Length: 240
Image (tube, rainbow, N blue to C red; front, side):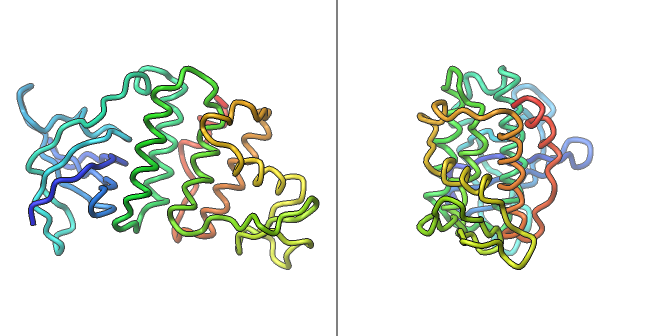
């Protein structure tokens, strides 16, 4: 079935002398992997630079459901980034986000609201002129709404604990070890009140931001099978 769709590159792995295996999140079919043969000349349609992490593409391919690696017929960049590839801070965030999404969306099927959220988020980051240190925190928390385990915030009261396993606030510490203490649990509600436009108004120290990153990732590890430690985490923690 010939398909045209938007897609977000998550990872490209070299295969052989001129091949790439590229994992993408597509708007029409969710997670899809492709075998790409990189052309030998500068005029070739398939160029390696098209498949950098978080590049937004327009694709055309013949979808074959029983084939693990699809083959592209046509590809072009949809919205070239104006600043992300050239700003070391934005680039570091984008590489972290790409690795995070690679694992958080591993089994994702058709999900148009999720794709729209990702496109909007990346366009915001690319267009921002500053005050984006909290971007990855807001991005990760709000993403949980689209993949099925958004925290239940209705029962929050001051002094509550947050149960990471069940995604809810409790008046007492859970009987297991996967929880966040009341002082830190309050930051979950704070994060959920932030959006990209207002997050600059919420001031956090680097230590607070890093601790929030740690418990958000712990939350994902509990709810996404096989979610690993992220290699890019150390860079984000050092910069922000």
